[in-house]
Image (cartoon, rainbow, N blue to C red; front, side, top):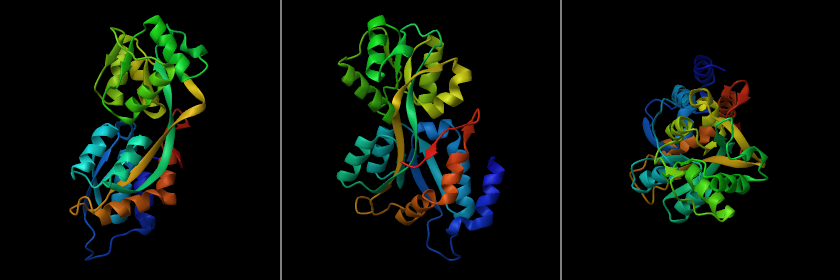
Length: 269
């Protein structure tokens, strides 16, 4: 489904959330979101469709999950779309967020040059694949940005019993797209969400060399800023967006985003 079709669909059905004339519903809400939903173009179809059906504009800033949650903690946004379950749960437990809802997912994959110098294709699991990279001294690009992907990467190193360091381990401090570009330039490995790699594979020359069986799931959740923590938060507008994201129409939009005929995000936790 292309963008124009999505917007026409949204406007035609109203999505059950059309704002009433004279309503006090906020016309703009602010959302901090992970970089992968921007890199893949998902926001480019979701946000206009939501506005077409409700009249509410979503102003999004794409950063790593750690920074996204910090923006919410500081009262700079009204809701967060993130993919680091442990950090999200801690955020809610501290009283900054509420109504955490997992909406869609993909998986993590180990990206690298097709020639696979460390031989990770034959690994038994992610920890084994990372161990092969460390043993070979092959270059590994870490996001190094306290994002959900960075947190998952560190958990794999920990499972492997390795504290990565040295000239082969490079921290980019950047989002997923730029990290993949660096990995491509250096013919290096990096942990990536499957969605961003699908859109960046041709540009970077990288391939998904290893994925878990069962998959290393990468769930994306929305968390609303608790108005008790930030009374100025546009809570009603944020709640309307969450309600819409749980609708059949939004799920259809998420499922319609494809690359080379394959779904990029799968609706559901």
